[in-house]
Image 1 (spheres, rainbow, N blue to C red):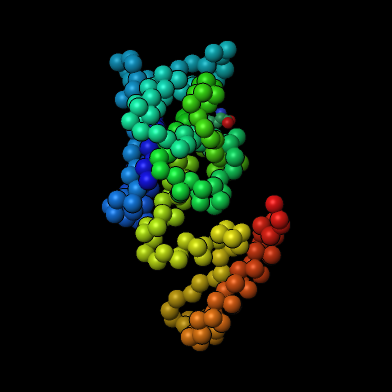
Image 2: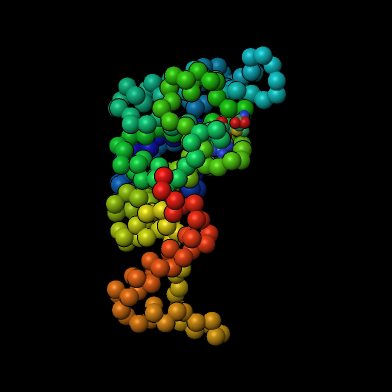
Length: 226
Ligand code: SAM
């Protein structure tokens, strides 16, 4: 799988993409991730990627040309399954979308900045718009990193234990059960006996019950049929 992230502030993406599971997946060649600096596609000597908004008003707007040229170059080299724009008014990012995207071959993610991107980019170049929540961030880099992380950990081989992603929250619309590690007794705070019993089937049953209970209590909306 290949993910190309277009950004005006590449530095913001460095740490999330070069540590932990994403780094390991990149090192194992399970995913190729490229951070593309939109300033490299600017036309003027200041390497500008933003300009004033037509009609006036506060805030700059990301220009169409650098984005068009960057996407054009990528598309001339391979086909893309999705060209995603991160936007507060996009569809809400969920585990279901992460699952879908993890099955794709090539994805572009455009991180917006300033007041947003020229609407013609959204109308003509973007295939999907994704929000990571109902709040406004300064740029799309953190959303792009979040989307990338959620996708990459689902690629077979990215996690140490293949089953781990399947038991995370939101897979099967359930929250994850509680987890514990040593010591089994910390100042009288004990780990549930069942987890120390060695009965794999019973432990599995207990975990499922815990998942259901937590979901009913904390996120009953997940249990409703869509
Ligand atoms: N004027 C825009 C609006 O009100 O919808 C917000 C622009 S925001 C300051 C700059 C960029 O950050 C956006 O173009 C988008 O790419 C990104 N962004 C901000 N919040 C986001 C969110 N909740 N989800 C995804 N992307 C977001």
